[in-house]
Structures are given as C-alpha cells and as structure tokens.
Amino acid sequence: MSKKKVVLAYSGGLDTSMILKWLQLERDYEVVCFTADIGQGEEVEEARVKALNTGAVAAYALDLREEFVKDFVFPMQRSSALYEGYYLLGTSIARPLIAKHLVDIAFKEKAEAISHGATGKGNDQVRFEVSAYALNPEIKIVAPWREWGPAGRKELMEFAAKHNIPVPVSASKPYSVDSNLLHNSFEGGILEDPWAEPPRGMMKMTQPIEDTPDVPEYVEIEFVGGDPVSINGEKFSPADLLARANAIAGAHGIGVVDLVENRFVGMKSRGVYETPGGTLLYHARRAVESITLDREVLHTRDSMQAKYSELVYNGFWFTAEREAMQVYFDHVAKNVTGIARMKMYKGQALVVGRKSPLSLYDPTLVTFEKETVYDQADAGGFIKLNALRARVRARLQRD
Image 1 (cartoon, helix red, strand yellow):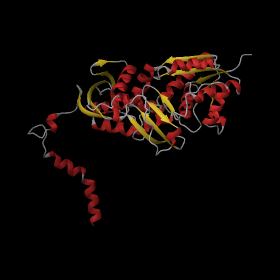
Image 2 (cartoon, helix red, strand yellow):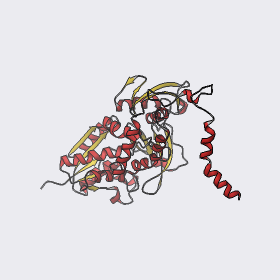
Image 3 (cartoon, helix red, strand yellow):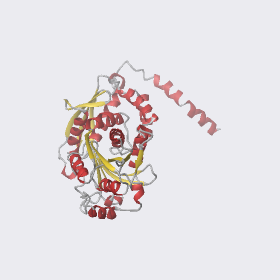
Image 4 (cartoon, one colour):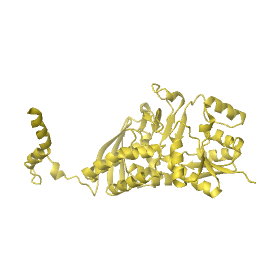
C-alpha cells in the first residue's frame, strides 16, 4: 500500500526543514513540499531543491507574485488597513494565499492533510488553518509545533545536525525573518527584548537613516479605481509596481516599524517590520482619497478599517464578514483616481501635491479671497442647530 501524503508549506528554514523530516520519521508520511514565490527571490528555488534533498517526494515552487499583489495586497490596501495604528499586515496578508495553494495542491496530489511550520504561540497557525478549513472543511491539518512540546531552537538545531539538515539561523543572525514583496518581518532571538534596538544591518530593503541621501527625492504615483498603476508616468504590473516602490522608498529609509503588538492568541509580541513601498503607497493613496471621497463615505470607510484589519491580522480572510466589507471598500475605491506627488527624505514619505479628474475640492469654496459662491452668514444658523443639544444640556446643568 502506498503511504499517506501530506502537503507541507515549506520555506527552507529551520522549522519547516525539521518538520519535513519529522513527518517522514514520526508520522510515516510521504511529504509534498510547497514553496510560494511571493517575492523572496532566490530563496524559492533553493527551498525547492533543499526539500527534494531532504526527502520530499515532490516539491512545488510557484510564482505567485502577481496574484499576491493583485488579489490580496491591493484589495487589502483599498481599505486603508493598518493594525494597531502601525502594522501594514505584510505577513498576515500572505497567509491566505499560501493556504489557498496548499489546499489546491493537496487536492491535486490526493493528499489527506496539509502541514505548516507555525508555532502554537503565534498568529500564523490560525491564519493557515482557518483559511484551509474555509476552503476545504474536511481537510486534515498536522501542526508539529503543537506536538513537539517545549522544544526550543537549541534542540531543533541539534536535530538538524543529527540529520544533516543545513539551517540559516546562526549566532550572527539570531532572529527569524519572513519575507515577501510587501515587507520583511523580524522577530525572535535578540528582538524578544523590547528594550533592545534592532541591530544595524538587519534590514533587507531599507537603508539606515544615516546612510540615506541628503537631498529629497520626488515621485508621482497614479491611482485608477483605488489601485496604483504607474510611478512617474511609467506603467507597471501590480507586482512590478510594488517592487519599484520598494526600491524607491527603501533608498530613503521609509517604512520601518518597531512594534509590540497584540497577538490573536492573547500574548504581546515584538516585531520589527520594513514596508517601504507599502508605506509610500499608503500615504499616496490617502492623498488621492482626500480630494476624491465624500466626507461621510471616507469616515465610514475609516471606521470599518480597524475591524477589517483585525480580520486580516487574525486570519479571517476567507470569511463572510471580510468579503462583505470588501464589497464596500471596492465600491468606495472606484472614485479614487488621481495622482499624488510625494517627497521622500530621511525616512519620511511626505505628501506635497495631489490632483484628480474626480476631485471634490473646490477652490472657489475655500478661498480666503472675496467670492459669491458661499454665504458666510449661513454658518450662524448651522452652528446654532448643531449646538442645540449642548445648549439644552447646559441650561439643565445651570438650573
């Protein structure tokens, strides 16, 4: 009889390399590995080869960069998503895409289960598994980290040495890294001390502020229907546009966030994120929105943003509530068409201009010069009506 199969989300790092061998030795599985190319670069092919060399019966390496940006990053960004005021959700938004293809490959390979390298303490286990169950309610999930018990990095390194598995974690880089086109995240190791400054040289896309240019750089970003389509007049595909934005903003040290966040499972965690292109696009989009969106539409959108960000952060992408909110955000974004002019300097992405053929900004209304469009005397009655409830309350308190 042939062995049972499991599809493993495989990065080539310490955890998933251990898991690959563990699934073979402890669970007697044939392991099919899947590595998603969402912008890691050469790491993807290296992971595929490493998976085969470590005993995988098959290894998929799929180029998902365009799908990632077009179908996940851009829809999320139309909501102006920002978790706890800082985090642009770079890791969170990649997980439902990976889960989607895990389930697809499991179907193709006739595998009974999927597996991942997320720990029992983190958010990713929820993101992978809720997404997988939403796509295939009968799927079986094997989560080795929840079965290993208190094994730490030292024990895993010893396991790797015993089975001749090369791992990328070393004393010179004692933290874990998760990379994609939207961001790089760093956590664990020396970063677990929230007082410790991240080591110099850790960032992969952004220059240290001390090394950035001493003169500002201007860039124009065009949006059509809520999505960015060109930089300085040059059209790009979604993935290429984000990559270009990363290069431009990263050179000026834009988009680094050092955050102690609240995980869905209940604990606080320190993460350091670099999201140069995403940060630049976030501020540019807000600039175009400021002149194209009605006040109440914008305020309603922003009031929904926090809940939407929680859904993405917690792993509820493939849910009815996220999809319903997305319909509203996509409808609102239809009018977000225009160009933002940005000034980049020493870690700052400053809005210095915005224009749109759909602009609601009317200079004849707001001018300080003499005009006949707006009768300022009307403001008196407007103010008195809006102050009515405050006046009634004040009378009661006075009496």
